[in-house]
Amino acid sequence: MYREAKVLLRPKFLPKPKPDPCMFIQKGFSLQRFNTFGIDASAEEFITVEDEDQVAEALAYSLNKPLFILGGGSNILLTGDLPGITILVRLHGISLVYEDDTYHYVRAAAGEIWHDFVLYCISRGYAGVENLSLIPGSVGAGPMQNIGAYGVELEQVFVSLDAIHVHTLEKRTFEARECEFGYRSSIFKTREKGNWLITSVLFRLRKTPEFNISYGAIQEELDKACITDLSIKAVSDAVISIRRSKLPDPDMIGNAGSFFKNPVIPAERFEELKKAYPSIPSYAADGGIKLAAGWLIEQAGWKGKTLGKYGVHTRQALVLVNYGGAKGTDIWQLSEDIRTDILRKFGVELEREVNIFP
Ligand code: FAD
Ligand code: NAP
Image (cartoon, protein in one colour):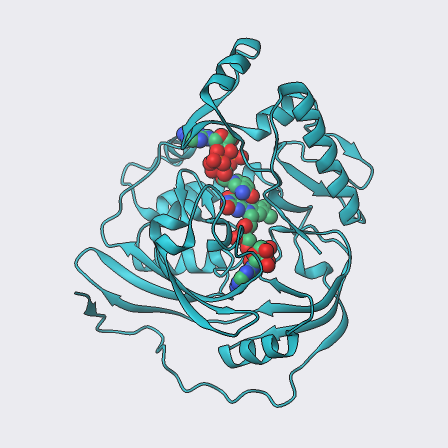
């Protein structure tokens, strides 16, 4: 059984504020600063929620209207204005709730910035999320696509999440096995898409780190920094440094990270491709062989391609970019052209990772 933590860093059961009798609804609200692509689209009605009472109130108001749930806007492409209600999730609070001999159990509210949560863990020596440093967005969106980077996925530190059904207002706790986590996927991105508003996530962080530094350039980066005494802070710093050198900063160039998922194909199909493209990168994956979508897109000549206000990033072919003033439909069409080309050239179907709204 779990031992209660001696010190609760931020008390979880503070008295809740009374619901605001006149919920603040902004009409025709510009979402340009609320999506990292920087697309100029607006929400018909926009509501910010900061506690669970406000969530319930906003959901009750949204019944029978189109509803969009927004976190940091770093994994969405807006192809037009959003009809109905857009709820911006800004629930805050991170607290150590209990511990046992092996783990610290930490609950983070959905509106916390993911990287702030990572820094919270690193500053206290809680291990497990260091490879997930600097992923943009909110804690609540993390389980949506089981965020992952450098060989670690959220599900490895996940215990459960609390959510509210957007139609029935039922409150429910989802354990890990109920979330159907997969590669950049969960039940919330598949058959329950749009049905639940996640309010908080409970994580399990190791007291003794189990380092995972074999992936990508982490070891190289640690060597460069002359790190001999490995720590979760050193791994986090290495990941941050690699990401800053490779990925476009959304504050400078609009983007939503990897636009496509890496495709997983059957082993027999891979053998055929390997004959035609002997240098094709590949990785063993559940149910087949994972290809690097970025490599396919680069081979097809799309890397660095610019179509006026938008294009494919110069250093990372998996990232589509808005240089300023592009429409969501421009970027969607570019993604469609890339998909068609990759299918024609390699016979491989690319699936979008980014969520398309409306
Ligand atoms: P949003 O974009 O606001 O929303 C994404 C989806 O989640 C939407 O469908 C939305 O409706 C839903 N949603 C949001 N909050 C909630 C909630 N509380 N309850 C229910 N549904 C909700 N992703 C990775 O996995 N690994 C990476 O390494 C990575 N790197 C990135 C690098 C860059 C530069 C960028 C721009 C993006 C990157 N991403 C990466 C994608 C993105 O950061 C993650 O998917 C992140 O979890 C999205 O969080 P968000 O709060 O911005 O979600
Ligand atoms: P990279 O290191 O150049 O590798 C290219 C691709 O090969 C990655 O997509 C990665 O798959 C795969 N890969 C590399 N080494 C692997 C290994 N040892 N085992 C299995 N697969 C391996 O990738 P990058 O573009 O610089 O990104 C680094 C990490 O950050 C990756 O994990 C990537 O997913 C993540 N990232 C994600 C986003 C996003 O928006 N989702 C954006 C930027 C970076 P995986 O993608 O499956 O890891």
